[in-house]
Length: 417
Length: 171
Image 1 (cartoon, rainbow over the protein chains, first blue to last red):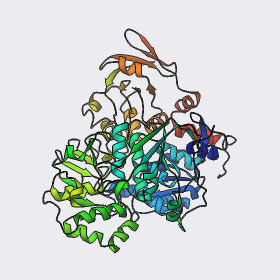
Image 2 (image 1 turned 60 degrees about the horizontal axis):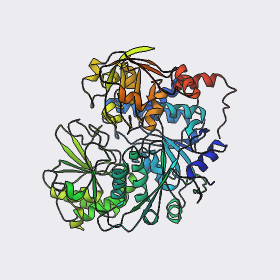
Image 3 (image 1 turned 90 degrees about the vertical axis):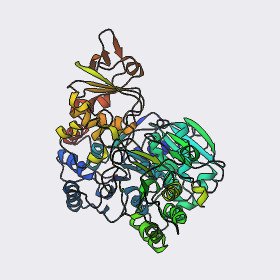
Image 4 (image 1 turned 60 degrees about the vertical axis):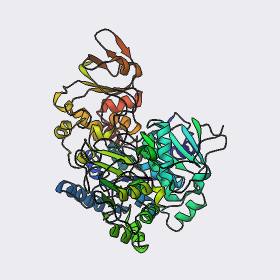
């Protein structure tokens, strides 16, 4: 019997044969954390150790509330800066860099065949590069800093084979929203996902990251895409470590193999207040809203901004809409400047924010008042997430959000393309 | 065995409605965290919950963010255990690591009703109601050790003191 990718990685990292269902003690390649590092430092402090065990495995990227929006946030950042200096943690990325999952990939940590653990639920994003990448809690990160090991249950794997060419105006975001809508928010709980098929192979790394990022919204522990030539080209010259791509065996045992044909897929929208409450664009067209958000770890990459800019070019955002643009990293921001994309946004009346999480988790930069509605490219639309518990959040692709910002109501992007 | 009243909720109780993201980096004190527990799901909960009370919910409890405060705010609010049909993976780990008992039992989640008084024996795998005793699989030994130590951090601390268990070597 062959092994899945997840079984192979955990066998390798635990240095013992590992099959789905077993618990192993594993040592990760990289440990990611962000602004919550301040809380992790507090937990680490309780252990009474002077030094972290493996400083070269620790990657800290500030992104959640950057720059600091209050004295408390400022204090958290200060604690983190002092700690990384004291512990000689080289892989520290202060506020200029951007969203942790994006920067983590850009800086060459998201690598095929690596075990990555992070104190953020969207850590599976790095699975787009062929890594096993899973979210964990703060205490676990603190104990990893101390011991360099953690217990992990080897997950069963669901393989999702996606075939067909997407039609104009339909993107990776629509694909994954469709899948989550059909399968439900709990379908992949405790499980590993494997995205495969012609559609995924033809996706850019940015689009694969959308799939892996949203895997978390199905409860997935990790969300893997096979590394291929596109992956290797993307990583050329930038990888932080040597790597070897790992693949599932053809005779691996899966919990399920699900097949999708996306050739006739239409734009999708996740409606309040759960990510699996997904509807076709025509069912929600003309829904009024107040704030458009284009950015986040799901859809703030160059290709996302370019699609939105294509729709907004030479047009004006509807006067009742506040349109926020948040490039996911400084690198993306610079590319967007070079390509004239930010100029288009500014001319059309958008507000361009600095790279970071923005208002996605409701901490700053555009939180919602009671009764307000947001249409966002983010991954989560839970009640209260972007501010008031009496606000609503719809989720869609950058194209749908851009088109809707023009009309002032949720709109089908295809008429602008 | 500790007695408490049941607070019953539905499926997909997510981390944002358990402990809103806007507080995750600004509220650090246990008493303050307790005041915001379940704020966006049931605004009256934090005022009325009594030490020993139990949350009973449907599927996918704790889905969403990895924020550990989703578990700690419930613990600080006095919740003795969460019983659900299923738990989201990271919440489940966080709860164990914070020493908050999490019990996966479809039967108990179906049977127990709002306001009902229950007594829970986590280690014994028992939930006593007025009329019956519902059983569940007690936690595995590894998990129990973390509970007995009072959570992951005290557990690791104890382990670290026993230097032979963990070699200070970077893989």
